Length: 214
Image (cartoon, rainbow, N blue to C red; front, side, top):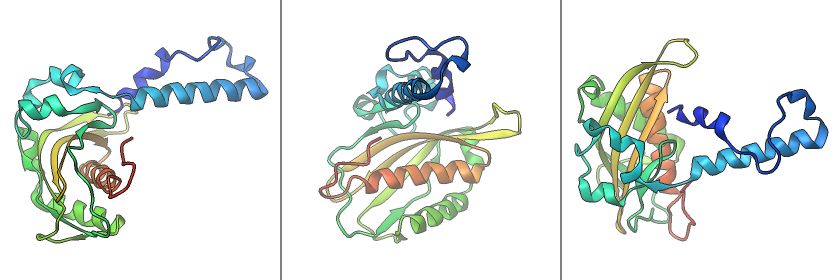
């Protein structure tokens, strides 16, 4: 998702409006406006709202394939970082193993993604995060692909692949629910980015950690 780009024209700067002539922004004043713009954009990106009030709820075809009504009531987030519920989940200290089941295809487009593609992506992600994939691991990831489609890129350089996945990540302490989307130039990059963000987020919820929440 590139939806965040649409926010830029509508962002209110904290203080004076942006001059119509960018050349008027010289020296420290330009830095100040940039800092204000960055802060306003970051605030918009990290703002969380209940999933029940979000735009993805307007696409019923992607709902109730893996999560149920009670799960959606727990989720909160935004379209850029996804929607999640920590649910007591903690990544145990010292655990460097994860069990992974390739997400099940829950929509027509997802059937084109072979389980081997998910397994290859998980192997790369696990290595990048210092993990080993093992079926008996105390951290277990499973899920379903609720949206998978090719969509034209904004730059016109070629198609992009959109993947939206719902995950349950089990630990001895609880279950993390996460509905997460990614858009990339290739399908391998899309599913890799999807898993990379999920694993990094879950690891950030370690014992004594403040959390990996964006």
